[in-house]
Amino acid sequence: MGGLAQSLAGACRDLGVTIRTDAAVRSIDVADGSVRGVTLESGESLSAPVVASTVDAHLTFEVLTAPEHLPEEFRRAIARIDYASASAKINVALSEPPRFECLPEPGVGPHHHGTIHIGESLDTIERAYDDAKYGRPSGTPILEITMPTSVDRTLAPDGQHLLGMFVQFAPYRLADGQSWDAIKESFADRCIEVLAEYAPNVPRAILHRQVLSPLDLERTFGLTGGNIMQGAMHPHQLFVMRPTLGWADHRTPIRGLYLGGAAAHPGGGVMGSCGRNAARAILADR
Image 1 (cartoon, rainbow, N blue to C red):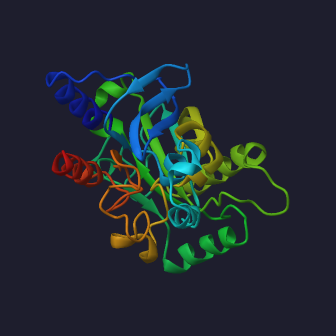
Image 2 (image 1 turned 45 degrees about the vertical axis):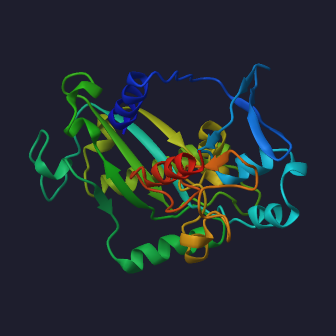
């Protein structure tokens, strides 16, 4: 993932683009129905005839844009977008790779190179989702695991590895007054227990771990509701209805403001299509 981002950044710099990071945006500036640039949290204003937003529709239109610049019907449609998500992320540093009982040989094997799914059956998935429907983290969570050091040894010291677990199901809204800040570590413990049923060496191999609850995903990365797709990928929020009906061409009611992230068509996934589509719309309009 990082390599892709760095390659894109390098291509931009070759074209003379200035890239600034750690420069949070306070507002999208609009006058006479057209975008005028952005104002940063530092108070600095950057003028531009075109602004392409790759944060979600909630942040773009309900946080960064003043409501008087948007039609009421459009604002109501944006407010109805469903950000329901039930996922968490756990990153783990290991002293050795997982040694699965079915393939117990030490070291990195071919099975470590792909995505590993822990979930016995469709019934297991259904039961795991039942918990989330009622505001509880899954008692038997479904794990989607990758080990990036299996293909890039520069990411960790010799002999050590990084393991990422995308966890289903972890509802953003919890029942019974629970908070993610209070329960996320115990939920991570349960996720490790589930993995240990298949790879018993993992608990003792853990050197460090990072637990990102849905709330952490929202606070840290600006993902509303912790939704990594910038809006639920339900049929009524796809194709001509993404982000909302009538505005699926990456343009917005504000001239010069475009939506280019996963909130736009065709949605979430590492494919670059949303940004490419937005770029084509920008070039066509100019």
